[in-house]
Image (cartoon, rainbow, N blue to C red; front, top):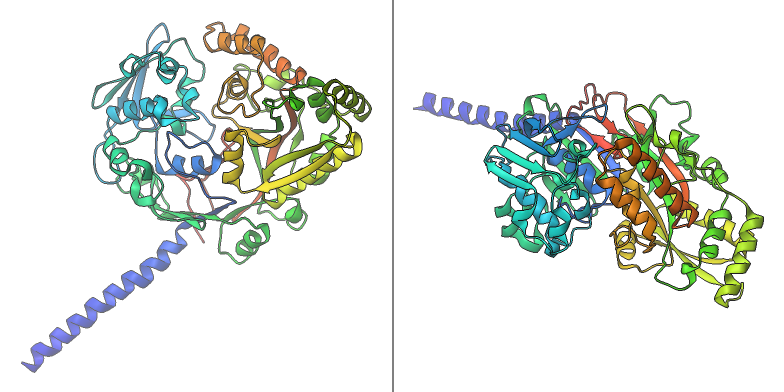
Length: 535
């Protein structure tokens, strides 16, 4: 009897030691196989039909997957779609889905894509990104309420076959299917959580390389490898975490003490890491500019808008304030965006950087006189409350005070509030930026058409609208490029916006991080194939 008790006691100790090893050693191993990144703000939501910002897209690209996925060269490769066929008239895509599952084990179906796309287009959803589905036949008609959902050119032929019909041949449509708005959604999950859908980690399901297991608001989003993902054997990380840290000094200290593996830095720390091999230049296709609220009479005056553009020395802004390698902008479309297969848009369309304080002062005084105003005008400039953004806003304020005598009130607000104030038109001047959704000038120029949701200042020009509309359905791609060049010139000449710079970012990246793909078009990391060997 005593012998049996001894064996029982030994067995219990053995089991407990195994449990403790699994909890302690397993957790330690997991932490060593975790990629930890930072961002300045958390996403407002993770509803792929409604998300509008880079923070959300960074997380969604790693937790969800569309028909296609972009590779290290930013070219579309098969994602949930194992293959596709394109009709001879280049109007109909037939996608054949692979055997893929959601994180709860249910199959990913063609109906999940049809539902997601039509939900984004449904006027009741009020998706600001509905316009990106415009290449699809009758997409915008349904969004405008003049067509029925069954008229839209996306249809699940069966569980594994999705047919998409376009209104005209599109040079970038396949790339679009990797974008967040085109990712699938489960109707049962959306309807189960209603207004709470995608506001918590548990209120979603995932079909990408990772699942979100914890979303601590204001702190971080934590992801774990999704073992139901169709290509999980090639996902090397056990975990990935995005920490939300506004203060740069905090991020750098955590990086130096090996608590995080990646963080962006600004000029304040650029020199300190100037010779470090861990300092990384992140090129991205994003343009930054000032939007003028043209709902108000003041900024309906073209001369006043032109004066502000000419009064800002953008070369000094990039060289002395930013110090990240960003390039002063004279146009909207960044240098890396294609015009055609062989040329970049900026190579075929020159856009000189303008700075002429004397001319600016002349236009300012003429504009004020036309509006019956005095020189003691006060204007609010709204932007993010990060240190980097505030530095830029202060520089712009100094320039406008010095060259125009304009008194600027700077309003640094949270990222979420800036997005909302832009959406509501609650600003006079808005510090804005736009990153490409796909590598084509249309991704930028489309947003300034009349009535477009991201045209925050409500600038409007009939000739511009006509050129953009024509370019969306023009099968002559070379003629299309020429029309887009004309459109951008109209936007800049009429000062629909005041271009500032094309952004390049600096960051710190641990040398043991391998295989993470920096997407220059979208401006964030895809870490499906990333590893942290030697962490």
